[in-house]
Image 1 (cartoon, rainbow, N blue to C red):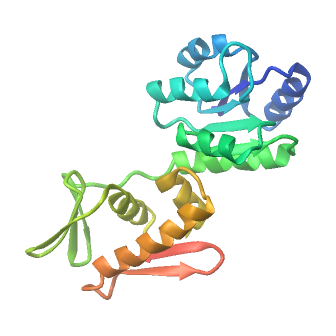
Image 2 (image 1 turned 45 degrees about the horizontal axis):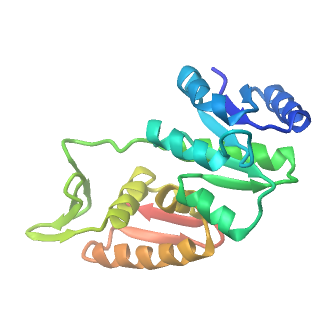
Amino acid sequence: MAIKVLYVEDELFLGKIVKETLETRGFEVIMESDGADVIRTFEDENPDICILDVMLPNKSGFELAEDIRKLNDDVPVIFLTAKTQTEDVVQGFKIGGNDYIRKPFSMEELIVRIENALRVKKEVLIPETGDSITMGKYQFHLNKQVLANGPTERKLSYREAELVKYLYRHKNDVIDRRDLLNHIWGNDSFFNSRNLDVYITKIRGYLKEDPSLEIITIKGVGYRFVV
C-alpha cells in the first residue's frame, strides 16, 4: 500500500511539481492549498505524513500542526517553507514538527527527509512481558519508569526512560544518532545533541553494575546497545 502524504501548499505551480514527483516515487499525495480545508481532509484521509507550508490562506501551517497534534501525536509533520528565521524554525519544532525544510529545496532532499521521518515513526515496538523488560541484571519497569537491580531501584526521568526504551528496541543494532535525537527531542539541534551526550553518560552510569551491557559509540554514526 502506498504511503499517503497530505501536502499543503498555496503556490500551485510548486505544488504541482512536488505532487507529481512524489507520485512518480510511489507516494499517494492528497494536496490542499487553503488552510481552512486541511483538518477535515486530515480526518477523512488519515495520512501517513503531513507536509505543510507555513504561510497559507486562512490558517498558517503552524496553526494546522497544532490542530493535527490534538488529533494525532504520532503522524510526522514536515514544514516546507520560505520562512527561514531561527525563531520560525524553533517555533515549528516546539509545536510538534518533526522536520523543517527551507525553500528552495531539492526533491531528493525532501524524499530523504520523508523517508527518515517515516522510519522513525515505524520503529519496532518493545517486546514486553507485563510492564517490564529484562536487561542483564536489570529490570526496567515501563509504567513506573524505574530501573531495578535486585533491591536497588532508580526512578528515571521521562527522557531517561524514553532513551532506555529506544536503546532496548534497537538493541545490538547500530542506532543513527539523528534518529535517536528526533525520537527523544523532536529535532537534532546542536543543543539537543549536547543533551544526548549527557544522557548517554548517565545511562551508562546507571548500568555499570552489569559489564555485559554496553552502549558503544560508533564515531560519526551513533550508538550500539549491546545486550
